Length: 299
Image 1 (cartoon, rainbow, N blue to C red):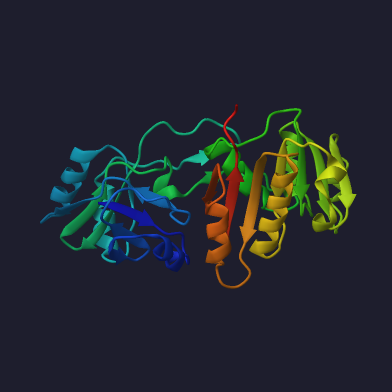
Image 2 (image 1 turned 90 degrees about the vertical axis):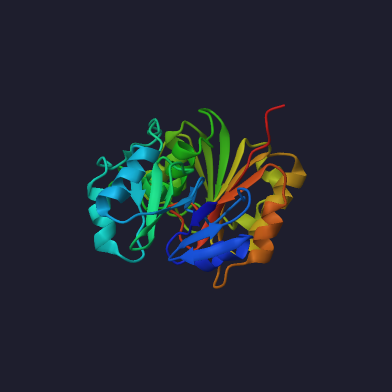
């Protein structure tokens, strides 16, 4: 069995995409069948097992026999679950610096289905407890917390530009993404109808264009290495913009935030998923939005 943990408030989105659902426990969805590609899973339990037990010590012994480090997800029986967790090796907080090495230790995850039944998976798809990625944040320099989405993508998923590459940042105001990209050593063309924070606009390697992103044609900028967009717009408008740039042949690598206006736009999301070399994920630092990246393999 495989279990998928939805981010808080996004269980309906996870259920919409999963097949062969066996049962639901809070935000945890238990499935039969093979591993499924998931946009909305915060944490995937890759080898979920049901284990009956009679006592706290028996439960903790069973978990220790399967693995060393465990993160606990609770829906009910919170006190009983805590007593079991207290008998396991202590799981220390995993807080990252930007672009630091990821933790090496594998993490298991478990929950109580009832007071005498464990659901436990010794392996998950994340090195962070229940997929909860935390950073030592810079709370002074960046003008907004949007920068954390790029920090997560660059650090955890390894999808990042190289120093000296030319990138465009659409919908850049107040400048959180431009700040990250400039720190990466990129030449940044920052585009928005509203101005950047002055300290960001003054950074070396940043060129600001005050205009509507949808009025900028690919030939206006020429060849670029990466297309970045955190624009607040309807998903279908973003799809049109990405397709225009793809068709131009002037850019192959894309990182965009699909921001849902009201209800989740499953139709447009599916169109993005059908594009070649595309991955979409609800990052820990996303809200009612997902991050899409398109990166063809090097020829």
